Image 1 (cartoon, rainbow, N blue to C red):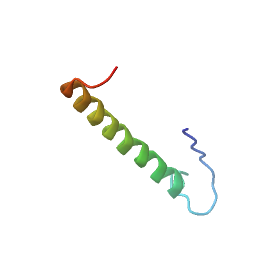
Image 2: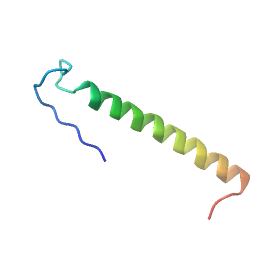
Image 3: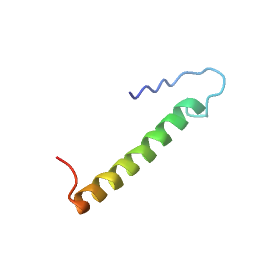
Image 4: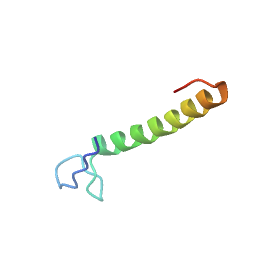
Length: 49
């Protein structure tokens, strides 16, 4: 789920993204890198469907 609201509430960065949204985007990026490494390791080991 990706939900980014560019509102003008408190806690916003200068471009309107909140800290929570910034952390959520970063976590999704890290998760994507981790998933790629996991799939690569499974492919090298011959594990998977």
